Image 1 (spheres, rainbow, N blue to C red):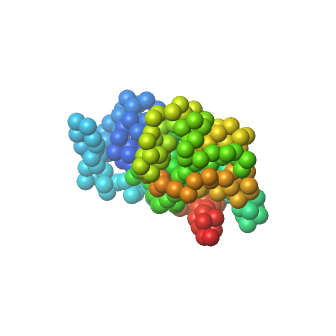
Image 2 (cartoon, rainbow, N blue to C red; image 1 turned 45 degrees about the horizontal axis):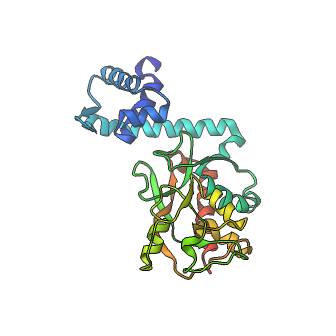
Image 3 (cartoon, rainbow, N blue to C red; image 1 turned 120 degrees about the vertical axis):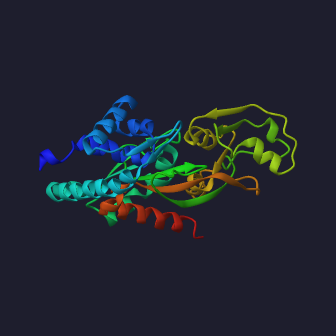
Length: 291
């Protein structure tokens, strides 16, 4: 049988390249060079005696043989995965979760004891990102992504649309008249920013200095310490406001162009732990904002 099957590594490379329709993206997923991916695909095509991809100038397309072969390869990997989990026993419920660090600290971490109480056999491995990743990390089953446009390479669903607004410490005194003389803080490279929030209200914006950081955690910490105002949104600030650590001094709230999405990798559908975690996240997000 082994002599009739191509090497498993070639098949894994084919599945990644077919999923992304890109040798470069497949190389990133598999921690390989683009040339190594290309060479393995050529070897597989030579082994099968027919091409699996049409190489266009800036894109790949699956041939008829590639379209037919892909579901066979994916089902074979699913079968191997199920069999491996049956052998490894308790490890089958280890779930790798990927999300940005502010969501992990401000929303997920305070609620993890509830998940663990409901699912004591599920082990979570949580990977945090500062910037939005291009793809899910290799091995990640579930990702919560804050993004303008979700991934089109894996199963994706809208988890939460949000509103953004300024917050400060309860004792901090500020008004719209004094805003331009107030220390302002923000997370960099987002469309939900100070300039848009001010201009949405028809106020004059004279480009006051703003301190930026690569994560909301910094600006929220400064605000809680009484250092000024920072922009934030409901998902990461609701608990802090409910606890009385922050207040929203102005009524106006703007729609966040970005949103939270739930991404599920192909292997998540074969993981009871991943399915349980995804369902728990949906339920807890809905519960957080039901009132």
